[in-house]
Length: 249
Image (cartoon, rainbow, N blue to C red):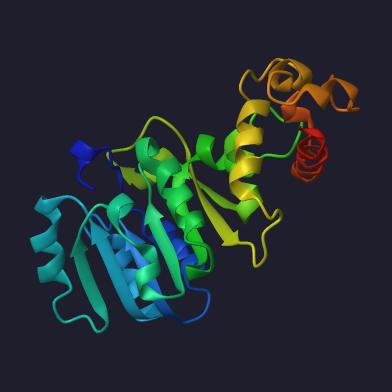
């Protein structure tokens, strides 16, 4: 995406190489790159993937990308909005991309919603987002986004990227994260649990009893009732949801 769409272009070669190695530690069959920009990471992914599909929404970047990689084997370029693109159409794939802050969460949600069609995803995001995705219970970063992401994947922060690695440099640090979708769901009713989790974190400083009593009256009798949602690990939230759901009329 061009600068007008909120993108800071990553230019530090050592960081680009490190990200490419993280995306493809071994030769990959298919990689989909979100927002190739000027092609700095693309150039390093092409030799690592038998097929590389780059999805770029900014029309001003399409022709330069086509010219730059016209002779690259296995390279395909699509002008499209990733949020309007069906990721399941290509079969199992690896996702990669430098995600602008304003669109990082919906892209991550879309990637995880693709389930088994995404083998893993490696994204460059603001460090604040990375901290929230990988947070542990009890930390200030642990919230609904954490639970939503870790319900569907194993989330890992790989390394920090300083502002000086970009042009123009952003005002915040960034980080590279790896998301590996879980092979089997942690619950048989993902949508119901996520609605429940959203209620749990609705007012983060309030207790679970305060947040849930309207929808789940039995919360008052549960041992977690006086805890805040940020204090409760994902596995315990899943168990609490099962207990409360079974007691609803």
